[in-house]
Image 1: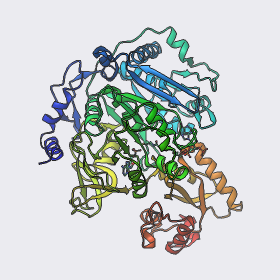
Image 2 (image 1 turned 90 degrees about the horizontal axis):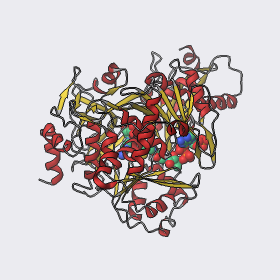
Image 3 (image 1 turned 135 degrees about the horizontal axis):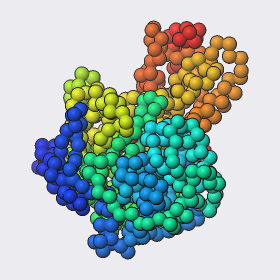
Image 4 (image 1 turned 90 degrees about the vertical axis):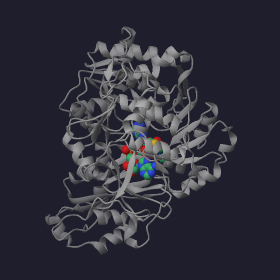
Length: 636
Ligand code: COA
Ligand code: AMP
């Protein structure tokens, strides 16, 4: 039996013994005696009676072990022309002081703190400070509009909001304070205080509930690490679901620490002292797990990059960073490489840097499309690894395990299930399908440590969204298949979630915004292929009877509305005014058909990223496939 097969079987056949062994690698205050138990609804809970503190495990522990002078954070910000290094000891001290500052505002164990910050070291300081106090952070990505922030504040009910005065996007300074003020105004729940980290690119004016970060820290007493239970929440991270309301994915502390530590060795093959660079954002799960927590838990150095793959200043940014910081393991989304390939198709900029330090390149966030895979595979001397995961799982479900048993790669495959994840492909009736047949990709219970333990404040939704479709299995929402060699291919979502530039967004959420416009009778938002971003949303809109305005004006208003309500990150820039939408005779929009049209399946040939279904094709197919008249559609 191969090393992988042996480890995988042990993890599935004897999960308690397997994870008990992994848990010994974590510096617990009190090691767990109960490894796995199930709650009333039958969901797995790991290490419930163990006691630890994640900040202690990632910072204080390493300082105690003699890593105090090793860089913990290498911050590189071409957009502000700045660089900074923070050692483990400096990071621990700054976190302890900021934790004290939060405590002075009344933040204690279990309280929520919303963090709205760009890629600055202080974002990590704020997250670790919450962990130090046992408070639960909820980081919101900077590209979201006030309404989205308000929805999250309303749901998480934070005692305090921590923000920066601005973000910097390539050459634009984006003031954050007006966004926060508008969000708090819109939310019926009001936080008690807001701490603002002032950046020199734009200083915010402070209001009555606002505190200046530096002034608050100056008078704060450093706070010690508070012991929490293994199953206590570390954070809530909101992600798009199929409805307008995002889901607050709850992450525990002990299971997460154990899973991340395991992944650093087994998947990424890094050891203490190595440099790990994940080019994502602290607002996404990749940022939480592989910029903020996993590298420091494992005693590695993490690169925190405030910039883009291109234009800051050119498509050589990543190569420079890998070379300059001697990065061993690099992780980003395929869309970033598609952007680089567009600007520098022969990767001439790569040749300018010595990247011999790099041992593997990891990609996730969306499917690694074969053309991008081949471009990278031809270019690089190191393995190019696609791996599949989601906000809910917190770490990879399938990967090519570089630290356990590297396998040959296959274009389009995320390789094999990671130990702990009993991945199956089921048909509609819940029966396993044969190799090469597509179906719903599910994970048999128990989910391994590190995965979501609930939806914040909504246990019913946790069950209905993930556990109800196939009893005993977690529904990933992705479709795919295993090939004859056991390689897993993830082909895309089976629901109305779309993936834009590696960011997950809900078409349902956009439809709610578009549908609320007074001139819109009916609408559907679909994702169509885009050569750079993978998918882009398109709004199909039927105006109300009697609409006499210009279609172009309506389109412009709808684009502005989505930008205002959801944010620029939705990339909602195309609207088609149509006569009809494909419907059942009872008037229900045929969403599956719309998805198929967008996927190109309706044209007989599945479109690929290189062969996108054009907007015109979508329009034509829409006309052909529509049942009912425009008048009937308006009656619904
Ligand atoms: N704060 C405010 N606005 C933001 C933002 C942030 N943190 N991030 C993005 N935006 C804005 C952008 O400025 C852009 O606005 P515009 O419509 O006014 O131009 C809009 O949101 C769309 O952003 P994006 O999709 O990122 O497009 P882009 O053209 O700026 O960059 C890529 C394209 C491919 C380079 C970029 O999306 C990228 O690097 N993606 C990698 C994704 C990633 O790391 N995913 C994490 C999972 S691993
Ligand atoms: P998010 O929760 O934002 O990380 O998005 C998770 C979704 O992105 C998954 O459910 C998939 O649809 C998609 N995804 C992420 N990584 C991959 C991958 N390597 N291959 C295919 N799809 C992926």
